[in-house]
Amino acid sequence: MTIQVGDHLPQATFRVMGPEGPTPKTTDDVFKGRRVVLVAVPGAFTPTCHRNHLPGYVTRRDEILARGIDAIAVTSVNDVFVLEAWSKAAGAEGIEFLADGNGDFAKAIGLDMDGTGFGLGIRSKRYAMLVEDGVVRVLNVEDAPSKADLSGAETLLKAL
Image (cartoon, rainbow, N blue to C red; front, side, top):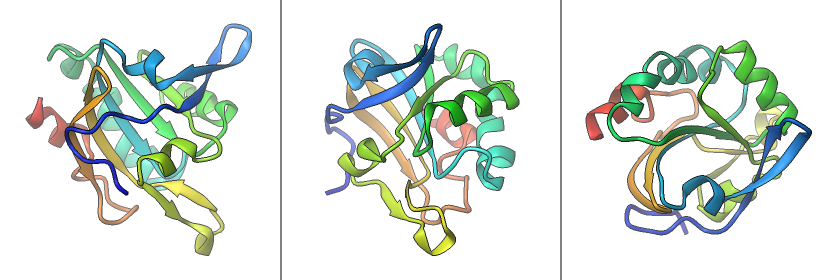
């Protein structure tokens, strides 16, 4: 079942890059007591994700945070090393990158997709959501992985 506005996020564990290397971070660690914009992409460094989707959040980061948002987080079904390299390549300082390496979070919220026909395996659908204290308040899911309109920074800003 796909997560809906008003639902609580399920418990899941992401991996983030810490000073000593990969570190687990739970949904409570990320969302409890915070207003977080969560952006999901099918894959780091893929054309739409790297050229169209993430850059809007990097460029509009301060504007988004100024609207009472505690953090912007990006998740993808990639390993923590790939996401760390992507965050550096994209100049995404101040944005949290949450590796969902096995797609457990994407599956738990019903927003996984089958990219095996393209050699990508199971991935996350592209979406953006506003999460307040673990509850989904806004959810914008793209109808195709090549689109980044509904889930883009400008569209999300209008909802904040």
